[in-house]
Length: 200
Ligand SMILES: [Zn+2]
Image 1 (cartoon, rainbow, N blue to C red):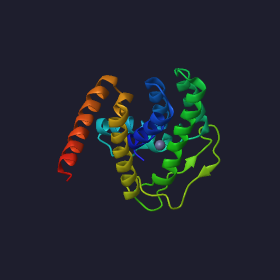
Image 2 (image 1 turned 30 degrees about the vertical axis):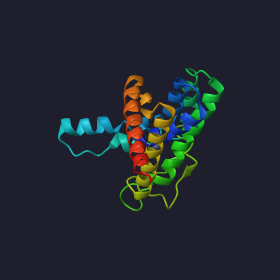
Image 3 (image 1 turned 60 degrees about the vertical axis):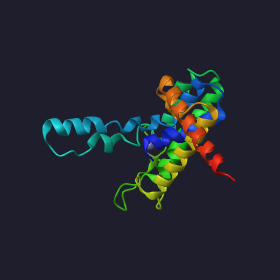
Image 4 (image 1 turned 90 degrees about the horizontal axis):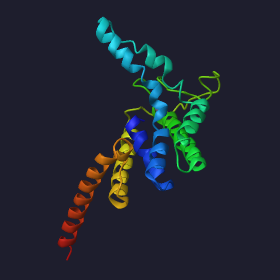
């Protein structure tokens, strides 16, 4: 799944299981940070642009899913994030949960464009090579399954935002979040007012 889908999914878990913005953000980040190991794509593309050579995605292919997609990464990220939490133990466990939810989503739906282009989960990397898990029915990263899940997550997050008064935008900016939620709540009121006025 895309990092954005991971963010919304993790935020939904966080918004249902924590009671303050700080812990909510931390639990959400735990579900997104595994994809930090995909940032090798930046030097890949920049290097290719500067040299004029074809982009081979060397760093991306070498490190993505290997540095932060296993239990060592899960423990390191979760402990680190929980240090900043209000409810440390609770956040530690929830970070482990959203981190593993990320792994599960990648396990089922992150195949490349060609049929045999599986992305395995190397659960003990970068410390040990094994175990290596992959699912032979893994669907494409841009497949309809991921798109459907994303739409479901997105609509649910909008609903939660208008109901609870905070949205996933809070993860990057509390100020922007307030503006977004205000607009969403206005739209929701208008939508329901219109529907109500049409009712017999
Ligand atoms: Zn991932």
